[in-house]
Length: 234
Image (cartoon, rainbow, N blue to C red; front, top):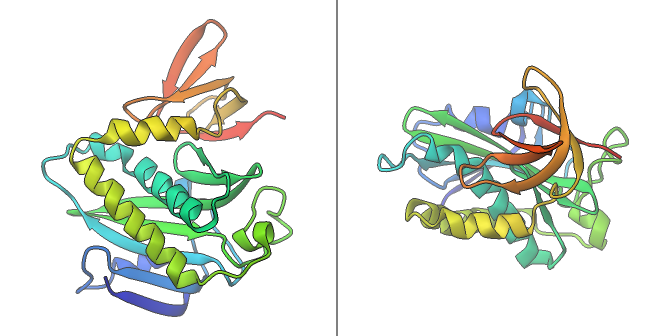
């Protein structure tokens, strides 16, 4: 595992795609990003002190592209497990791949497929102070514990945790991962709106299903979604 460190990049995902000799699990990390993006193209902006990094994994031809639709959940779960090991805090998994604590987001993931590989971008609030614009929805490790963390060590722990879970995933052990994700399901039982699907749906969130979809109870019926932006009703 090789680590490439930069003070400023427009996006670690964008940059890693241009690297010709990048190997599986090599890491590109930046102190700051000028054009970081999350799912659905949402901006991911942070103050210095966050863990901003990307790495690649090679596609396994024995796994269908439909199965790979679960990969973002495996990544988010791995971030949660790594942060739990480091801090022993009570993190929750917010479908599809965010990590939450104290009802605030601490990490987000972006997975992109390029040719025969997947580019995995992760942003984790570590030592940074969340900006005023997002402090009502975001939080960092330091803001919770009042401790400073070695950012590179946190990043390595996350990648190592993902490697273990990706091997489980490739060996057909997705259900083991899913069962634990559902014990940590932040949305379960919450009244939510789901948007970005051509209409707005309101209901109560249930479990995450074997195919990675979120179960939502709408009146007397259940529906299942694999895309959409979730808003929790207060």
